[in-house]
Structure formats: structure tokens, C-alpha cells
Image (tube, rainbow, N blue to C red):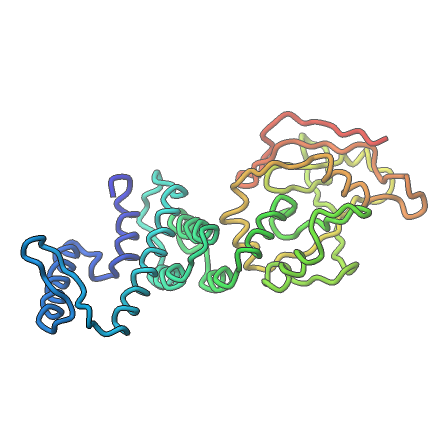
Length: 315
């Protein structure tokens, strides 16, 4: 509340609902709790100790009620932890009138209460933060997709995110016998609905994108941290291409809202070696289709180069 009235209102809604998020919510909550405690004391479910001013459970209390309250407590703790994780990702400088829809908040809360794993709690915290920062960018369908992710699936997707190109596909990771991901991991991503398909040796091939850089035509690819490009004059044969696995719409949403901002370290040599392997001449196995690859740091949000351009010479 001290950092942002808008964020405070959203968190209050998640914890107490729409009515209790109004100006008198705390008074209403207090009165309601007093009434519940009064009924429980009169019914014998709980005992009030005058000396300690504490309420305690009656030993003969119905087991079903005890279990039910325990479940509610666990669910509340899960929600609070997810909210706590979201606070470190929220942009408090943005305090516009727009805010997430009640449908989104209700669905997020209903799902977050069942999240027990700490890794997934962090993901759900980042999802809430992203929707607060940029309202109405994550669909309810995307929440459904994320809800079904296991910890292993989430970790696999996080692992491959460095090799997501243009924000919509993952570079085929195989280079000879050296693989970035195992077959089991790729099958896991397919079954989780994060890549559209996975069948070994059935890939999607596409040319590098084109643009002008300082009035010179280039072919380029980008991930979340770097741009790799080739000047048109350095192409020996045909336009360079890449072999990829397409991401699903849900995976694109997860990547663009969460993983694209993490700036994970990238093994430049490894990625370039994969690019070169894919672009060897079919007639001369040692001949590459271009002479040099240039690269630099890249801001995927602003879509601009952010460092000095370096060159990788191909022998």
C-alpha cells in the first residue's frame, strides 16, 4: 500500500474479495470473525480462556471441520506466498488506472491456492506481477496452460528459453551427438503443450529474417539477450536458414511475459556452432554458406542493439 495504492487494492481483492476490498473491509472482516467466534463458542466447538484471551479447539470437535479448516489454512498460505513472490517483480512506478480484470484475479487466486511447490509459486508470482504491470496481456487460456505445468516441465522450459528465437520458436538443439536437451525433455515440452509438435528429424526450416542495419542489408536471428547477423555481402550461396520447433501460443505468452526479461548467460560458441552445422553446404560438408557471423547484445523489448558489435570469423 505504501508503494502503490493500485497494487494494494489488487492484493486486497485477492485476499478478501471485492466487498472486503472497499474502505470498510477491515471492520467488516473483524465483525464477521467476532460473530463466527461467538457461534463456535456457544455451539461448543471452541473454548475461550479468560486468563489468556485465547480461543482453543474443543477436543471433541468434528474431525471433518478440523480437516476443512486445515485445508483452507494451507490454501491461504499458498496464495500469500505467491503474492509475496509477485511483489519483487512489480513495477511500482506504473500506477495507471488500468488493472487486471476480476475474472483474471479470481482465476489466478483459485489456481494459486493449490500451488505447493516453491518453484511454481515463484512462477505464479511473476504471472501476477506481469498482469499488474501490463493489464489484460495474459489470457485465461494461458492461465489454464500454466496451471497444468509440473515442476519438471517448468524447469525444462526455463532451460530451453535461452535458445528461443524471435520469441516464437526454439532452435533445434542437436549438433552431431552433442545435444542441448534430451529427447525426454523435448517430449515433455510437447506433452505440456509448450511446443506444437516433436517428432525426431521432422523440423521446421525457415530463412533468417531481413532488415537494414546502418543502411546495409543483413540477415539476422535474435534470442532474449543477443542478435546474430550476416551482411548480405558475406553470404556465399543461399540465404542462411534455421531449423526450429515452433512454440504454442501459451508458450509464447509465458516467454514474453516472464522469461524474456531474465537475461540468462548464453554460450555464444555453442549457439554459433549449431548455426554453422545447420548451414553447411550439402555438397561440401566442410563448406559454410557465409564467411562471418556478427553478434552483439540485444534488447528484446526495445528491439535494439545495446553493445559493440563483435565478429565471429569462420575458417
